[in-house]
Image (cartoon, rainbow, N blue to C red; front, side):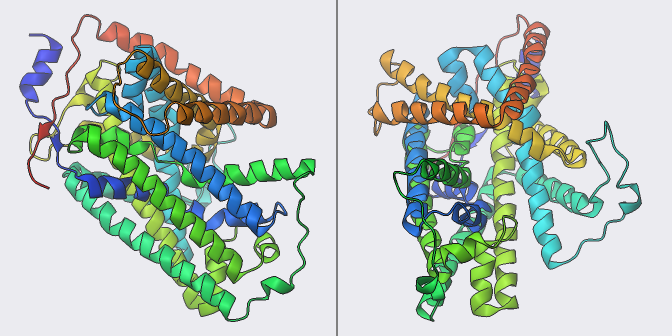
Length: 483
């Protein structure tokens, strides 16, 4: 009996399409809305731009994100299998391109994101309830003078415990994890709406924004373009995550219809919320005041504190904690499906393709993702790893936009795509410009990122050799009736 047949015999179960359109929209919104919306106005205000220019930067980043959403919505018409961006790359450019995207995610960027967000969550808990540091006496022990596994040990233990808890919860069924996201995302949106109201109330109560003299850039000045681009990049970071819902395509009902609607609707919802909350920030405090807060301070906390003092600070701390917890829950769900799909295609360890016979989740993939993310938490290098892979992520985004054009030209995708062909073309131009700027301004980071991605090449040939001659496992998701 072949290894593939053996896996099928022992694993004669499939994923279930149990997630409807509303849940899919909330998954998109819940993934995008993290901590950036509460913080990014501060470095943007520090550039010296005016209120209108800052709002324009948020809108510009939102429009670019929407063009990317149109592109992903088009690619979602191509397949009903899980795997998302990996699957789109594989179908468009072949197994090697798909593997490099997926392996980069597992080894660096996606696992690093889980580690980083878990660490941010633990830090937000620490801001409310101080966490003891039981291994502080070992904090100076290092590996190669840059990995300090025992530094901030208390925060790391809380981060690891949270990853384990959410992995266990999502191990027991995607409806559980998605249901938790619905609740958390609704609370996040409610918190943002209350913060918008707080900013407007602070303005109405006599904020001194009109009395503050602010030095603005003029459109013709060379410095404006640099400042505007830096501000747009900050906003673009806060919009990131709109592509991740594609990883769970195999568990969404009517994915060719619902997934494009969910991506576009979720992004539009976030654009409106981001525009309103940043307008409220600048009504509750002047741009100069916000710019003077310092990069590590939180604008939302400042505005809430003006109205409610310590209570306001506490509420915003709870909101940030909730946001990071919700985002962590969502990406644990999403990323495991990528590795699961790679395993089905013989591009990862085959056992990762197993589905739990009761809970219908890719449980081995969830465990493997959890284990590597915990290693990255201990390493403390997750921020460095994800920063170095940003440059390569931009290249993948451009390739995916080109993939849509390629597959439409070949008529592999026959459906009408919103904004096509201008959406992918403009998105490609933006990403190329962004990549060139990153390469120029951060050459060591960019080149190191490429080097880390290149490490995946030997693994591609390893898996190709290990599973040579074995058939791939076709994904067959069970469609359930009902709303």
